[in-house]
Image 1: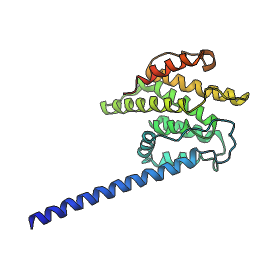
Image 2 (image 1 turned 30 degrees about the horizontal axis):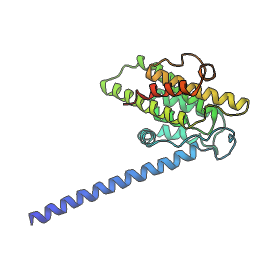
Image 3 (image 1 turned 90 degrees about the horizontal axis):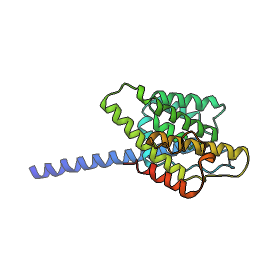
Image 4 (image 1 turned 45 degrees about the vertical axis):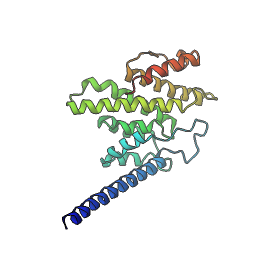
Length: 223
């Protein structure tokens, strides 16, 4: 009888754990689909620009945690191509994310369908990192900041490798170059490598060998 009860108990624990895993997977999938509708350019207004890559599992998991805050979902909800009206929409969202340490939300918007929103997200990330010395935080809070740094370095390298360094056009090429420059400035800031300095990408870039060398130095900071 005792053996039978033990088996039932173990079975119920296994089923409960399986149901939790399924619920977590479903929740992540729903968030992934929802975020995809926000970030994707369904209007095709900016088809001259490279298609931003999909979010990584690490960023999606971070977003899932940040979505516990209803305000995060509220701000995201106004940023789809079907609902977006004014730049104040992504400006207000990024301000909220920065003030509330929603770094994964900021990183997600670096792949937004609007090129200006992508650049603004990178500028906001830069501002957040520079403000860190002013934060009074606990050991747990400091650990959280370090985890955000690691996620940021890894994701910025991912989107950098997913984008061409140059595109054709005049205004389009200028905005894209500004986008690439901001990625590099953030990588320098997060790793303290100081490879680019205050130069823009076109001022700094000489050849692929130089560029690959910089990539390796930034990559070395991922633990």
